[in-house]
Amino acid sequence: MAEPVILGVRGGSPEAPRISYLENPVPVSTGWLNLTGAIKPTEILRFAARCEEGACRHFDGANCRLASRIVQILPAVVESLPPCKIRYECRWFRQEGRPACLRCPQVVTEVQEPGDEFRRAATPD
Ligand code: SF4
Image (cartoon, rainbow, N blue to C red; front, side, top):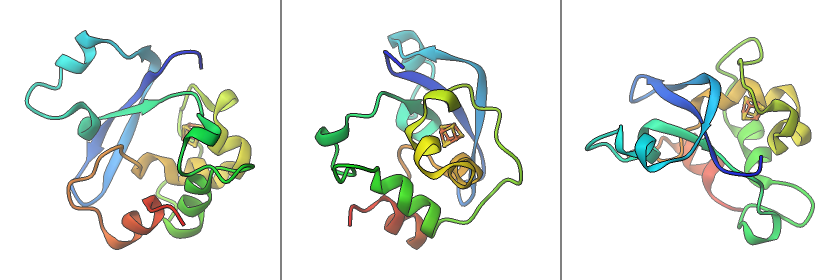
């Protein structure tokens, strides 16, 4: 994707967040960010952006280690592919395939009190 987009909105519970994927991801804009009011946008909106490769601490030169850890550490939370509109350009899917998508709905940008599995998955090796 050329520009960052809002991919989905957080639902579920504090302990078990679930992303509802937007029918049509929208470009990130001040108007959308202001809609979350007192809640930080990163706590309630799921963003997607172009992979920055070497500029990202999760990239090892060939692969996204974050995607690898998510698949290795977190459980699958859905049984079928979520209705995600960026699949054809998603690095996580290209690298890890279906197992990444089955875990993706529990991934939120910012978690106030992450559990042990989420913390390990998010921490660079
Ligand atoms: S891992 Fe799958 S569900 Fe998640 S953003 Fe990529 S394509 Fe979409």
